[in-house]
Image 1 (spheres, rainbow, N blue to C red):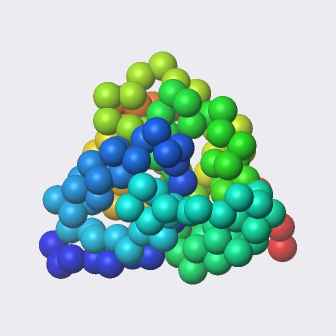
Image 2 (tube, rainbow, N blue to C red):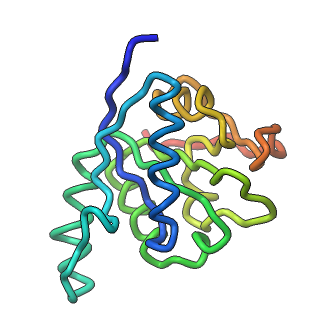
Length: 157
């Protein structure tokens, strides 16, 4: 498989920074390298104003990316920042893909991801690559098995 390069923004909580490297490794093993615009410990944000962070740091990075990937762990659902990032990506008509963290069990999706995601996949490189590329719009449980049937996603004309 030829190496594919994609511009993504990985929405996550800072406590999960370590998992970003694992996700990038999983993608690399599946033939995809990503240019990640997310803010993490290797690309910190030292601003203090929430409005400034949203409008001048996060929004441009999300706008640049073709896909929003949400790294889902037990505490992701409680993050107002993750919620805002997902909603901003949706407003900009970005593809939104949830990826359950490796070994993640019994956790809930962030509300915005549950409402707005195009796909939510388990920890499987092929599934993640296909979801990022828009080749599948599946909803999976953390173990990769199919999730319950969801209503058809509606789009405005």
